[in-house]
Length: 130
Image (cartoon, rainbow, N blue to C red; front, side, top):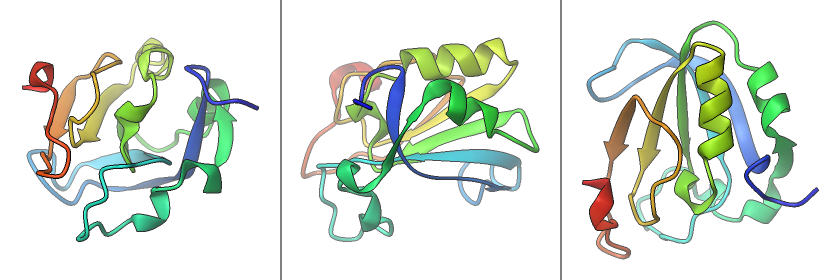
């Protein structure tokens, strides 16, 4: 299966509680997308960097595994390396609130209810993310 807007490299998915930021303490379902070339030395999920290490899953399969809440957080790696339009569209069709955690280093795709921007000096954010 190839990576495209219908199929994405997924490192892991899990139900948990948002641990940081404005939505801290809220139950959420996390989708950790594989692939990141920003290369922060302090990254706590370096295992996500190589998208080839992760299973390519269809958007429909990803969404079918969302449980426990209507808040979905797309994180990584760097999710915006991939086109997020179809994933966010289908999540919203299922009445989900969709949040993004990103460095902003890539052009924005997708329809988001909330964006958590964490700029990195190694690869500066695209102007449109601000």
